Image 1 (cartoon, rainbow, N blue to C red):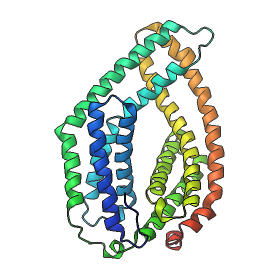
Image 2: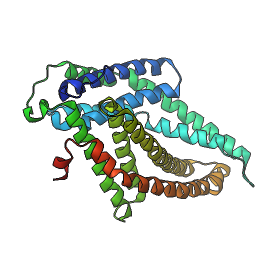
Image 3: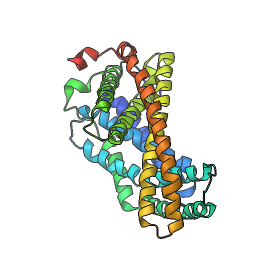
Image 4: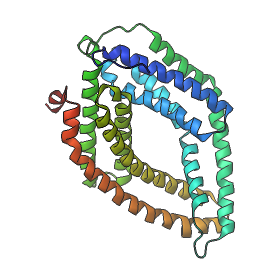
Length: 310
């Protein structure tokens, strides 16, 4: 991506970024179809997710009203590989576990076989989808939309500089995270649901920081991104453990082999619960540190903070 000027109009810059991301999506899709490499699929997901995040965070610039439709369609390109990603993480965990007293090695091998079969089936479905007319239609439709001449039906925002809007959106996302952290102490929703919402919000903030890093002081942005990585690591680890718990519960429910059912109940599920308790404590520590950064975010992304706080 070429260097972005602070005073460039927001809409042309965003359109150029989204076009470049679409090129990445096409390129990674081709590689996914040719290479059995999880990292390539991961990069495909990231390219799509970055697009979806920018479409959502800057949706107020959409004068056509069509952006939500394209955003929803692109999100399906992520969802089709969610199960495979969760299975990959669970498979890796099973392979890396140390043997425990009373563990049945036969049961572990049997579980690995079950997961390998499930992964093969998920891989087949992903390949079919990426080759489908539905997938082609989603990408071509979004490509056509990006190629159309922009008609500024939201003139008040359309001529705003990318720096001004970047300040506004990034700080706005920070304030949303601040509210979401406060909600963790309330008992209205489950902790899993609230942490999932928070994890997604941090991911959005990280993508925004990475996309517009060139508009700000390099050292300060590096510090913000370093903070993001630490928080995302602990939130991601907890989310992975939650998804693993759901997969194990489903496996146990459908499994007819009593040895494997017992292995899941006696060894894997208790081990996962102990792990989750430790991760919750790590998350609380990281969030406590993050809440102290408000002055730094306000100072760095200052253009529209007054407007946001009204």
